[in-house]
Image (cartoon, rainbow, N blue to C red; front, side, top):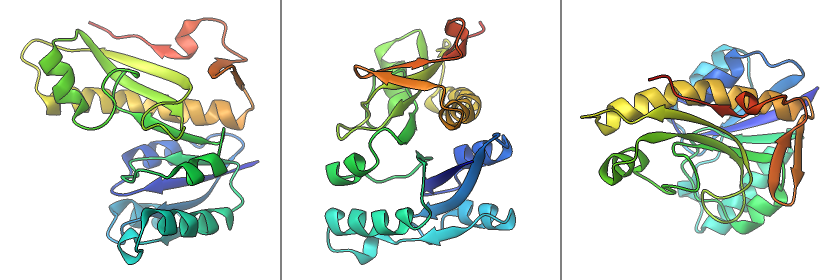
Length: 211
């Protein structure tokens, strides 16, 4: 059994998807938020999951907040730390502390469209495919070894909201699968690239669009 700690800042829909997946061998040890009003905290507590809040506004610097967050997280002895809509840019010290056991889902096909406003930027650039990426986190924002990706078509007259909704459906499937692979020791990280031990074909780590 591996302890999984999930960080959220809002409703935590990806957190909910991971919990609902009931992943074999995964113990959701805690859900932690930097916002006391994060709706996902109540959702987790209702399901008997331990929750905690560390309000970043109470700290004078990003470094002091991250140091306190490390102390809080380590109290749950995490094997895996999952960012699920955690709206904080993490310091290098934090990321390095959880090297190779910290993952994130980003709403684009990385390395394209790092940062914010990914859906509108994809539409503005006229790309035909958008999607999401689950990756190990490194000190460089929205970079790090890619675990899996899911692609969706960008439709004529798409809006950012409509595209975001289609991608979120894929996130809710892809992220629990990535957590399950980690928990089952199926991920191999070699030369900054990830392979999946059980993968017989690319369908395991690439979800393709249906037109």
